[in-house]
Image (tube, rainbow, N blue to C red; front, side):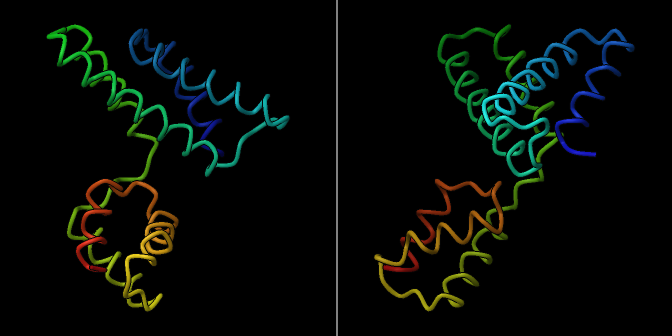
Length: 147
């Protein structure tokens, strides 16, 4: 069963359980996945495509959470945190900082990267192998290793 189908199935389970908050979040995710599938003229997206969309939605929720915190809006903060939890259920777990650094070190050694001009290749390979890595922290680490 694809990720898109799993989300749709879970949405129906939330409806049956009368869990309005979860249903609303899953309905939005399902409609977003369906919209992209229609744009690409396919019935069902691949799991990689679905995960990319979910990652984008998670990033948007993080930005909304930051805005809610800045505006001191506890109601929006709670909603954003809940939606981030639901989205995260469908994404692979993010590696720890130590795991990310170990992966980056392995890629640097594998590619024989020694200069800053190799940073793009290293970052690209790391994100291919582990899409949930924190790119901001990782780029700082890779810069320090290559400089």
